[in-house]
Length: 170
Image 1: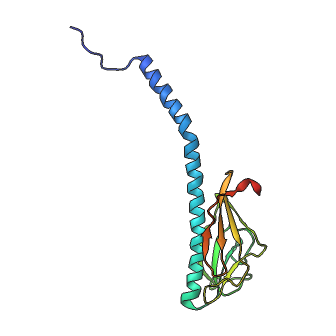
Image 2: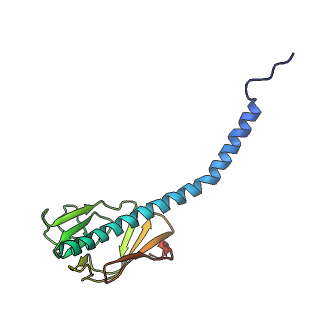
């Protein structure tokens, strides 16, 4: 009586490996796009959180609050929105001390962030309204074709533009 085999033949193993390689090749672009969307979403959420924190602090403490990207020493505001974001009590932007800083948000290393104004900070008054220029922050993951646009209103609220931003237009 013949016993059934307990293993795989070489041909069966090669067919399975070939099928897995083909499925992996088809899935990799989806994983890359998923990673870009995840990176973009995290960056937009962090920017929105920093601006919402500043606005809420201005309203609840009845003080003026500024959000700006920091230089390496956290002593001055810069125009590089990919740096750490400082939430500062008052309207001071240069010669900052640790007492001025209410909160620090980490740098956005995996995205390019562009502010469409030359101004280097958002300044909130005691009502939570913007006292500086309103505008948009454009967020693009490194090497991605599409990104997001975060729009700031004069009331101090942010919204994400519905249409994806074309990162290749920069």
